Length: 192
Image (cartoon, rainbow, N blue to C red; front, side, top):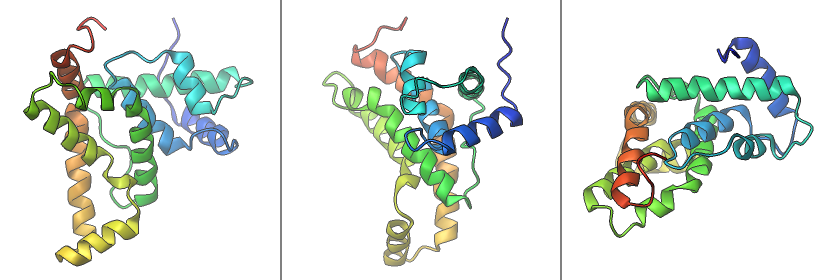
C-alpha cells in the first residue's frame, strides 16, 4: 500500500514544480483549492483536480503527482478529523491571499448551485454565505482592507488577526456545513 504522509520534501518538491510553470497554481493557491474541493459535496476526480493544479501539464512527473496526492491526503485528513487550520499565519498576507483565491476557485464546482437552491432554508443559506465570505476574505486587496479599517476606525493588524481567527473557526466546520446544505438542498445524494 502506498504511504501518503506529506513531508517537507514533498512540500519543497511541489513549491519548486508549481513555481516553475506559468500555468500551474502557486503552492498556496493549490492548498486553498484542494481544501475547497475536499469540502465539495460532489467528488472531484483526481485527474480533474490534477489538471487544474498543474495547469494541464500532460508531462507531469510521477514524483510531482505523488507529492500532490500526499498533499491532498494530508489536507483531507485534517479536514475530516476536525483539525484543519489555514496553513499560514495572519502576518503572511500574500500567502493568505493566495490561499483564499485558491479556495474561491475550488468552490466554483458547487457553491453557486447550493446558495441558489430554492429548497435550502434561509438560515443554512446565510451560514454558507457567511462562512464562504470569511474563508475568501483574504482574497481582497490589502488596500481595500486598509481603506475599510480607516473608514471604520479599526487598527489593521488587530482586524487582520480577528478575521484570521474567524476564518479558522469557519474552516473547522466548513465541510460539515457544505454537506448539510447539499443534503438539505436535495441536489446531492447523501451517499455521494
